[in-house]
Image 1 (cartoon, rainbow, N blue to C red):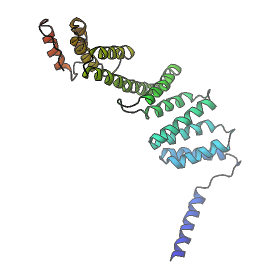
Image 2: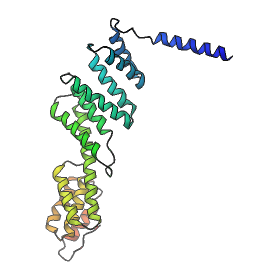
Image 3: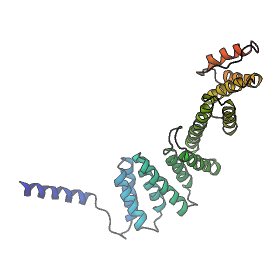
Image 4: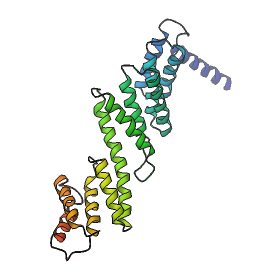
Length: 261
């Protein structure tokens, strides 16, 4: 029975091999075949199989008109796998594409996917933000270079998400100063954050804690505008009720000397 099983297995593998057979190296339109098969496998999310077809085209047909697109395909197979290691490998493929094909009409796609790959490597706000800085750099590169690209809306979203991640990290540093009762350090961090990223999605909490830090320093006139900005710009903020309460207290007069938590 063991011998029969082996024979049957070899028969199946041989049949599959015949079905998947690729043209011999140098055969006419072999590059077209490889690209078509790679594209089909990519659409099926068969990342490794698609990558093998694209890789063979790139390595074996340096003069093919499809080589640049196959290089992009390799990068897409890595991104499709959705792992940190594959994002790193994918980013490298897109960097190489831009090095080898800088004037390609699909250069905008390569920069977009490179920025996407970098954004997928970003860590949480409380951790190291090196990858976030890299993502911002690549996404800004796209925004500066391809104002009319069809990928721009997606890149703008990725860019805003990356900026928010970095701003969140900076906010946490300011909040630490606030919590260890160093209002001067907190004010410095919060004001710099608002200056560097005035579109930060979490500005409401920056306004609130900046105002609170200023109030702790007995700088109530300077604090009031930030409370007001929170109410005006974020009518549904989770800090709204606390802000309204603090404004009522602070506007009563100098007898209120201690800021709330």
